[in-house]
Length: 341
Image 1 (cartoon, rainbow, N blue to C red):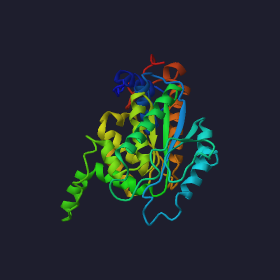
Image 2 (image 1 turned 120 degrees about the horizontal axis):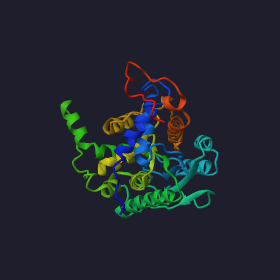
Image 3 (image 1 turned 90 degrees about the vertical axis):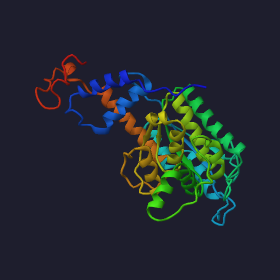
């Protein structure tokens, strides 16, 4: 099993020096500069030249035996068909950045084999209301599917992946998984308000992620979790967006804290579960566009920001290379040098 390697600090320092010497005021491109430096650390290259990308969407329905299941999986089935055939908003965004879109069914209620473009790797036909949501075998299979997809894409040269999900009532699972991971935080917060939450029966996610996902999760979150873990092992940058992909990201960092360095949030959602996830991860979203679209749309746009950071790195000149005078005072003095080219 591959280890999750720490980022290359010496490479990041060299990249930061180079970024600081681009023909602009020091730090003026904000978080784009941080993205470029972190990508350099992930890939072990001071100036990464290319960023082959993919958008990976895992599909699964939640609470299929619940009273809220009025469509019997038709809505998510049709949504998967739309994206798999290239007609969704995410497809348009992905085409603009040259990213392939992969749709994988790990847990839709309906059979999807008849949909062109859907990779069927079904671990369960929808998860159940209550606990357990699925068997541990089903959760383990979904995790393995995610890991296998990440390993395959890395073998094909993909260096950055945006994550998405399709599925009905997926927010129920996202909330349950997030609550399971944050149970100590939520219990302490509730006690400060004079309330008492009964979350002790939930397992320890850090020690038994498969067991907890089986208890309260869903197939697509399990697959996303597996994908993130393996992607980090393969040295791949990962962009996530909403509360469903965020639950998987939070879970992966809970088990392997070093994975945080490989993760990039994209869109900002007002949804409180997603906000809790980002607060725990110590992250802020980049795109304030009030998205309500799932299917990886926000992640595809997040990938475009990574592209922009590398364009900055590779297409701008340094002061030395451009023959521009370096700063003689202010923050750039001493940091901006003619010999950095």
